[in-house]
Image 1 (tube, rainbow, N blue to C red):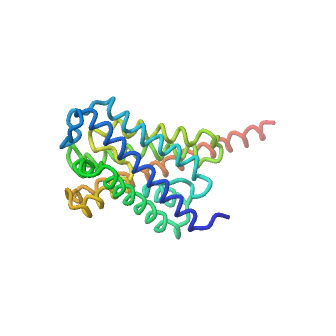
Image 2: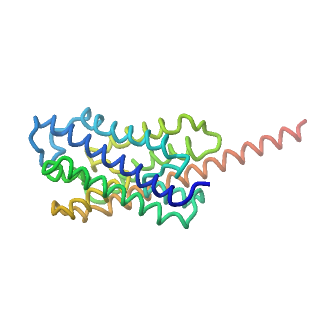
Image 3: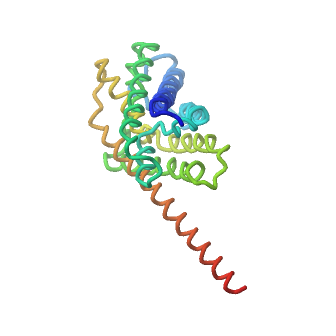
Length: 256
């Protein structure tokens, strides 16, 4: 049996890899777009192809993290996922706070190391922090909720459902991250993960960069509500299909 300490270490490391390499991808892509100069704000001039390149790094980090740590911690790497699994009784409540704490710490360490490795340009990029670009506050929450809904529904189908073939779970979940984030990145920054926003925000605060905390509720309420909605939706659909299957089976037995 894996100890809680090892599970937390896996969650910390997995979230660290996600945020660190995602931030590196942002830096590389955007400096190439701007010919080596530091963009500010960094979203202007970025095309869908650029967003796809950035989010492929996030997706690949998720894939690697899942195949590395799924058997240890379940490979959540996202407070919204942890809370959604708990909400449908697929994760013990006593581990929710430790898991989320480990994820937030991992994300923060990743952002600080990103700043250490890249220097002033990383700070100019706000450490890759997410913020809404073209829409209002409530709209941004809804966009984040829908993006996370897609991710969590995928997790429920390919990882939580006992009928799923686990060998493909990591790949499909990673692809769902790439799709979801690419579609919403130019709108909200494409977080779908409260830890992924928390790390850069705290890093910016520590390093004296911009203060974006007024946007933080977007990346808490949106992802968590979307993930919980997806978990309950799938639980409902699955329970109904099982009930219908049982009803048909009983009718068949009576007919025979």
